[in-house]
Amino acid sequence: MIKYIIISLFLLFPSSTFAQDAWEILDDFCYPKSVMDIKFISPDSGWVLSWKQIDGVGNHTLLAKTTNGGADWDTTLLYHIIASKFDFHDFDYGILPYMDLYLTKDGWSTFDKVYYIPEYEAKVSFAQFASDKVIYAAWRTVVKSIDSGKTWIDIKPPSQGNRLLRPISVVNDSVVYCLSSDATLFRTTDAGISWSTFPKPSFMGAFVTNLIFVSDFYGWIAGSDERIGKTTDGGETWINQSIKPDHKLDHFVSIDALNESTAVLASARGNIYWTSDGGDNWLKRLDEEEVLRLSTIDIVDENTAYAGGDSGLLIKTTSGGITDIISKPIYPATHKLNGNYPNPFNPSTKIRYEIAKGSNVKLTVFDILGNKIKTLVDDFRNIGKYEIEFNAQELSTGVYIYQLKVNDFTESKKMILVK
Image 1 (cartoon, helix red, strand yellow):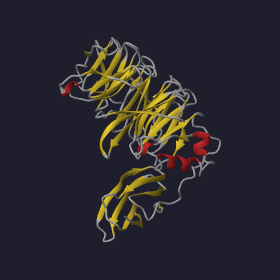
Image 2: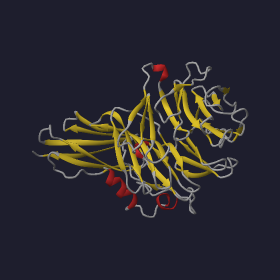
Image 3: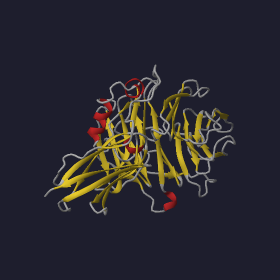
Image 4: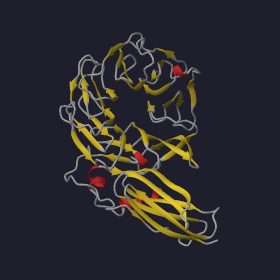
């Protein structure tokens, strides 16, 4: 499946402005799962976190690394760990939170559980390096290590209560910011000895789910209704930098920044914004609303960024997302169910289909009487061309129907199993 998608995007559509001049589509090694997090330490070297199912059952963490800008990937599967965030101090030294904390110093060839507390109230889901020695983690509490993960100290803010701490932004060994489930901002400037709290700015939307701080007191928050806030005094006051204050159909799912001038935002509906002046102007660098679904973005330098989303979507720019001609990429014009190959077949055949707009897709196999045999796909798919294998090892010789359903679109075709 993977090879076919990549061939269709690059060989069939070589003139796409999206693919060549501004944003390049990279290998979807984690299809059909979403890209959850991205961390690059240089324009060419970095990691991607996703999930993977084994035999269609359960989820496991899939980590992929590249040293050539996404041209090639090496993957590592961490069984029975379902993480959604991770962090790296350098290319090989990384930490991954999933209730407990897992740490590697050899690029996940081996790893150790370095933080384990049986009590659920002490579990963590976010972690970040402050330095090679100092690491912070948060969710139901805040913990820190000052010896590279060997021992951990609980530094939970006294006023946190039962609120979950979602994202965490670590500036240095002493300065850390956490955002709670009700958008309260927690700040420490003395490595967790004391904490200050600040309420959600009144202009922000219902949810504030992202934050990034680039210096002791300078940072951004973002969330629903495309609302953005910037602070230069550590959260005591906020500047409203919202892009569309009256537009409530989209929300920001990820924010990252290089410094006090350059930052990027990704929205759930496929929009990417870029600022080079501290957020005074947020310029749209990708406009794929209702085509792509994004979940994370990572900026590497003034020109390079990686973003990921549903169905294994992974894209990259080396031009700051800038293109001279703003145009929609050339994609399949309509939903389409192609013929299976081979046909007749025994015992397996490949079914190809095309999706013209990101949608919920259902691909089902029936017998000739209309009885459902198997559901091959029942999930969201981004725009593109797909291929899936159907194995009929346990079925009898006969005619079978496979049907593609996408919103109001339905198409069916016949295939013949001969044993």
